Length: 295
Image (cartoon, rainbow, N blue to C red; front, top):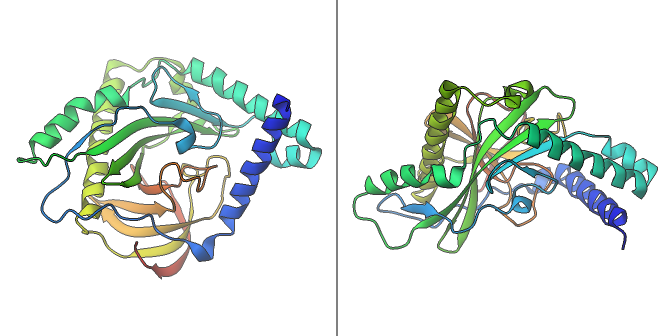
């Protein structure tokens, strides 16, 4: 089978997944909570392997300097037009997006090039030390950074992801930074900017661990189903009203929930899987739809 036919089929399949996700409002289910920990917070360690990019986003992402930092460009042509014009147009569009992604990632590779796997070794050690007596079983954390630029946008969105595996369960926790100008990624950051980004990243990691432990200790509120709009969650589909959940706050940050767990294929064209917190008000609530059971 030729490469362009494979690309065309992949693009069409992705479009069908996206269309199906928009029709799933009635069946929204919050992600499953981690196994209950009644006595203490859970110790953590960096997972042995870096993140598998296709488990985070079903599309072309370019690596940025290390195995845990990626760049995604949601531009290069119209997917709908490609579908209308046939498989060849779809393949051309997919190729254009991939090339543009690689080109922009290469130009931005010196900006905020923080490797989250190495960066979190010391913070995790301090976190574990603060727990006192630590049980033998530790949660495996796979940290990663993703930069995404929506089509025709001069703004880039950044996220820190923690994919966590613990006692046979897996979940995803994501922190969304405030957006930055695309042009700011074309030059290395100043020492002050790099220090500020590193400090925010460490705070974000601590926040995600706090949310993970709040869930494990069942210190979370009910889930309200809602239609949520956010370019950070759906850079490929500006203005899409996604079926998601709302569940109170963690340390003053609203918690937004999406369906699915890492690698299960749900919501493959966007970044909605798992639990999300935002540095600022990075989402809108289009419609509230009542409480749903927490799994």
